[in-house]
Figure 1 (tube, rainbow over the protein chains, first blue to last red):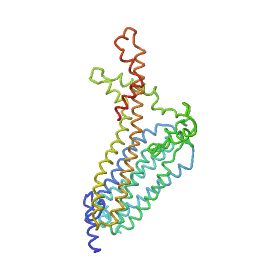
Figure 2: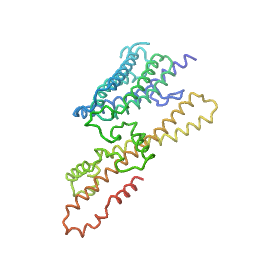
Figure 3: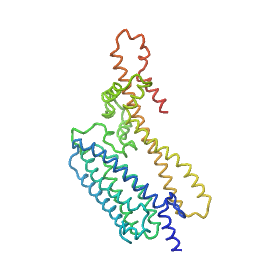
Length: 92
Length: 297
């Protein structure tokens, strides 16, 4: 039974789907492309445009702890994403 | 990446690419958030939309990872990133009215509200509360957004009209559309989302009917269906309200620019021309409002 689920998972990981065979879910490949890759690319493209418009504007906000809070949490996210990257690079 | 091929059971073909782009996006978010925080008066739309959508997507992905055998550690890292993302969404969506420099304090809360404020109309609540207690006066209403001021609209639309080729058919229509293309595009995006959510409903209902008719299907299918229903119905509700909001802004902008252009033109007409322009005087704000309402509905 265990052997069967493992082969099922390996088979399901690389097929495009979008529906995974044998269970009620998307395949991992579909999720990697449409739920991770596409939003990241869209964000990168739109932030280039947004940064270039914001760069010309003056500063409008006083110093506040909200600023540090935002940056610390975003740094945590990038660390965690980096960790997932290492997961794929190193054998489990 | 060579090493990754040793453990292909962990991810799909695109996993490495997806997580390296995810890392780039996260680094980019830090820079963007820094600039958005200091140089914008409202919470960032791009960051909040990205975080909200990727949060939903991450939840779907975490579920897949927990159900795929052998990816326990990876699923744990993903789950914790979902937790951090929730906290980030809270800080990123906070409004900055209190910490703006005085010269940038706009009197209308509409201007400083982010995507959550716009989609739930929370900037209107204080006005509604005031209306419950007392009679509203003109001074109680919020002033117009700077983009919706008649002077701004007139400048923009008369500029495009001056540049347009007046000989082409329907030249005024096209020049009006191009002067107001951003308000029009911002109507279209939530409408497209609404179409998507409405298309999803019949498929969802068909799936629920098959689920309820079969005894053998487990609860593992039922709960995601409940979640999918929440997503589709909630998404339809929010995209309807955002669509209506931007549509109203668009029609107000159309009205603002058309009525001013007509008045500016009638002021410049010679007295001899009045016989042929009788119809123009009938073109008032009220009749335009009726026409636009008919167009929307």
